[in-house]
Image (cartoon, rainbow, N blue to C red; front, side):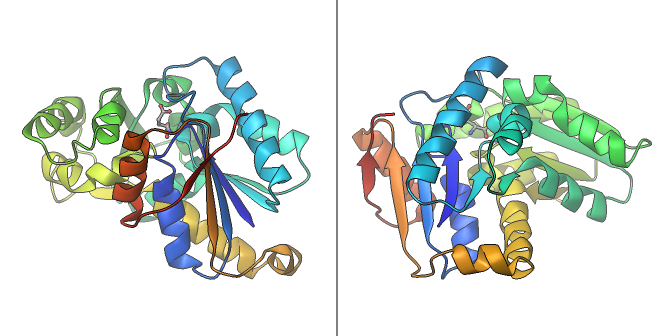
Length: 261
Ligand code: DGL
């Protein structure tokens, strides 16, 4: 199984993208809904949670792990990769690769949670590969709760997106990375507010393409993955609102199983 974890349900955008590109592969998902959000927590706490989440997915039979959460990808990738023998993937590098392969001006915007943006990871990784690039970041802490509430096209959401993107508007960026699990659900509003000339990079699609290429080129891992087109979804807390959010993201009803970590 392909193991995917997130701080909550936003990571289902990654599940959605993986299912689209690799429909036959089984997925086991863990959403840490009891402890969400991660975007406001410290590095140490997010690393600790990420270990627990990975342990759970391994126990459930995952043969590879995708850290769907940008905040956990920023803070915990290195530690998880050192500690586990199975392949660990994060969502940041594939989005950066895509951005660098499509930008013409090397003026790149990044939006994410406060934790992701203050970790500076996108800027660091982009500059390592392209020192002349200009990276402009904006933390958008209100967008996660708005998506969780299902306010995907309310006027208030449009107004807040506009306000967050304002600092990036004057920088003549030609590329904008959506550095958070939840933002693909606001892609149309974001595109409208940042302008149609800006190419939006959806990290859920970039990671799914990366995984597809990896699996195609790794026969041993490929053989270890079960292929019944079935997915299992576990969460650390369950409410009616979580069920609704999951349904909205995957556009179908799924069974969320509650597990105590
Ligand atoms: N999953 C988080 C991320 O992609 C967003 C939600 C949270 O703050 O936990 O950064």
